Image 1 (tube, rainbow, N blue to C red):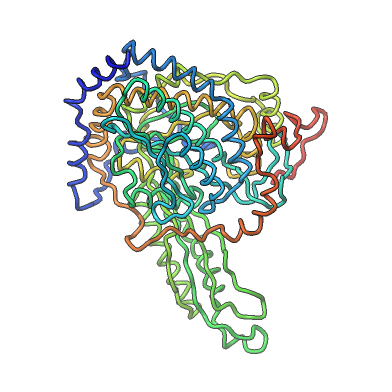
Image 2 (image 1 turned 45 degrees about the vertical axis):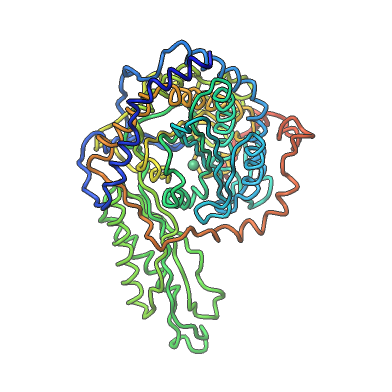
Length: 586
Ligand SMILES: [Zn+2]
């Protein structure tokens, strides 16, 4: 009954207030950061990353949800479930295609071309190179009033040296030393795209108002995309963001996440070159400054909060030993619980760098912020609505082959070989106590989540018990495990979109929570400074080395039913039970 659905929606549009809330938020212009009260809401802990070992979290009993039980919504949801299921083949193709591109952050150009072509054919308006990031894009489609607007995001970048043959339960690179999807970021766009196509069809047929905006998490591993997307205003009309990230369960949570806030900063030192043997006394080594900064940080580490995470790599340590290095740089990630604590770590880092320069009579040339992110806080009303859909959809049905790959890989890594999870958690995970926050990985979805009601849907496309950012995390990512997990994710995403489009109260409640709970005492202020630009040169050198080799492995769905078939891999390929696992899992 298309007409009935439309008029019902209009009836609700009168008290539909998100934009009143929003103008209040946007007018609170001076972005003054207030210390976060250590209350339960601000400091909950929710593991976001696949293998994040987070704090024990209390769960909240299923709340009286605002999700509609309107029979017309229920009927649309039943149709959406079938329509997503009918697009399982498309999910498989997108997942396998992105896996085969194996692109690193800021170099996701094949991914961009493939996805934007697909979405353009589906009637979305595509814009490429948004926010000064050449590999970025948005794809938008509106119906009627265009309100509310839902944004659907997911990361697309890979991990260096993670190239792996899918479906093979031990270390066996496709390209030696090449990048790969060792974080599973090849799967989330399939979740969003298929959900978007299905919901768009229903909106057209039943005349449902709204806008769908799709976007990629570019260079998430460098934490260098989303703050720039926010700054560029791509979300200026967005009411709710449904982000999605690969995991090994199907679920959503609300409140402060377990992820850390982060500043990624590069410290460049400048010295004076000299013949390292002929006249070393005339040289001033920038490398010495880099090494002393690293040493200084290691001593300092003892006297900073246990919850911090900090780590570094040296990408420029000089050219050759007989030339005293006149330039050198060290790249740090500083992670802490929130904005002020992360800024404090960064300030310590700058002082340690200044000390290192003083000791070596070199100069601290520049300190570049290469990436950043807030620790996310997720919307309670949206999480509650989505959780009902999670329970409705449930985990995929794994078969013996899926479980054999999972167990084989877990055994190979010396992890408990319990295989894949079969059940969703019936309880919605929510806010924890401040004491539970232990620190961990980061995701720059935090910057989005502090600008509008946002959640992250985890969908079960990977195997539990893996190290993360590792070749092993790529193994499942172009197999039926990834495909089935992404179909389940697309179903939940589609159903939640229908809740948001059809039930205005979901959106008003989300903005009420955003304005009156989440941002009551904490106002967003980006880590990036007005002059900071996305470091889009990152990874260009690595991709230049591997791109030609990779090209011959790009998936061709016109010839092969799956990427496994194209590669001639028998699924699953695991070590025979009697073989001892190798020790060299690197
Ligand atoms: Zn990720």
